[in-house]
Length: 518
Image (cartoon, rainbow, N blue to C red; front, top):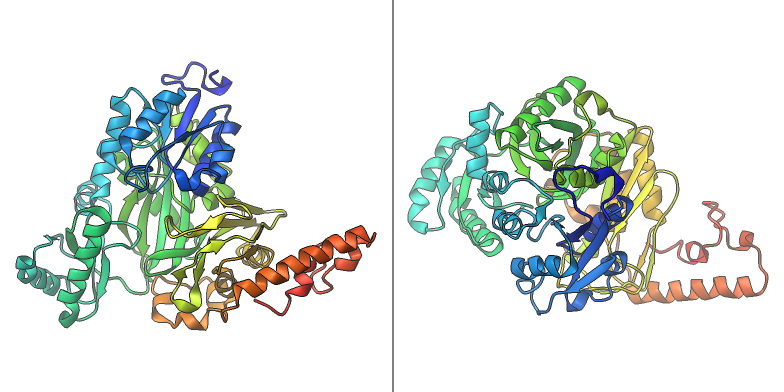
C-alpha cells in the first residue's frame, strides 16, 4: 500500500529494493520502514545472516562467489526487484551507485531510480568533463592545466610538459576515480614518471580507466563539502557544509558540521556555488559538491559525488532533515517542500568511522569474529552500523564496522561527547582504530579546529596509534567480565557493586576489569 505522504505523487511506489549491503543498506531500509515503505534487501552467500537482511521485509539471494556476480550484477539486481515486487531501487553508496549505465538500465526496466539522472552521473563522474562544466558555469576550479594523460607511456613527454606549466607540487588524479584511488602527489620532477605509472595502474584496476589529469596541489587547505538536494521541478537548495579535513591518504577519518573554518560569508558563497554546480547538470536528489578551502578563504571545486555520502548523518544532525526520506520524495516526483531559508544550523555534529584495522601497522585491515560489540547510547549519540556481536569481519568487503555520530550544542561539547562515546564502544575480537580515533578527538590540533588535509600525511601515524594489544587476551577479559556480571546478578548483588568509580557507569564490569588495557 502506498504510504499516505506519497498519495497523488507523479511516480508513486510502495516497495524499494536496496542495491547494497552493510550499514548503508540498514540505514536505507530503516528509513524505508519509517516512511511506510516495504524494504527489500539483497544478499550474497557470505551475507546470508547479516544485519541488513534481518532489517528488511524481504531479502533476495544473489548466487555467485564474486562481487561481479552479486552486488555488481546489474541484471540480477533488476531481476530481484521484479521478483520481489519492488517498483524502485535505491543504490546506497559504493558498488553501482555512481554507474550511469545502471541508472539507465533501472529506468529501462520500468523501475524508479532513486538517484540523479544518468547524464549528471556521467558528467560529474569524469573529473575532466566535470571540470569543464564547472568552468562553463562559473564555478571556481583549482588552478592548473586541464590536460588528460592517457595510460600509454608514449604520452610521458606531454605529461612532463603539462606538469611544468602547472608547477610543483602537483596532483595526478584518475579522471574516473574517487576515494583517493588513482591519486598521487608529486613534489618534484624526478618523481613524476613513477607516481604517474602508479596512479594509472591503480585507476585501471579500480575503475577500468587509466586516464589521469594534472592539477595544482594546494597545501594547507581544508576539505569542505556542501550537501545539495534538488527535485525534478527545478528546485535546488544546499544544507550547509561538512568539514572532512582530517584524513589520511585521502580517506576521511573524522567529519564534522559545520566547519570551524567557514564563516557565514564563505558558507553563503560556497553554498551558492554548489547549487550552481548542481543546476549545471540538471541534478535531482541528494548530492555533494566538494571544495578545497585555502588559508586565504578562497575555495575551488574539487568534485561532485552523485550519491548519498558516508558522512551524511552530520548534516542530518545539524539541519533536522532526513536525507534518505527526501530522496524517496524526490524519486516520487514530489517537491522538496523546503526553501533555502528553511535550512538552519543547530549545534555541532561529528562522525568517526570505526574500522577493523591496525593503526600501528599502517592501518592494515583486520579480520576475525566480533566477540563483543556494544554500542554507546545517550543524548546526542547515533550509531549507524551493519554488524552485530558474533559477526565475522572478512577481507571480502570494506572493513568499516560502523559510523559513530554525535551532536552537541557546541563544537567543544561535540568533541568531548565523541571521545566519551568512543570510550564506551566495545569492539573485541578484531583490532580496531578506536584508540587512534580517541587520540585524535582529544588532540589539541583537532580540538582547536586547525586541521588541514595534509595534517596526518605529514606526521608519523605511530605517534597517534596505541600499542597493539593481544585480541585473544581482550576476548578472555570480556568473557570473564561477562561471567562476573552474571555471578553478581545471581548472588543478588546491586548494580552499585559494578560501578566504575572513575566514570560512574553502572552494570558494566568490563570497564573495571579492562581499565588498564587500551
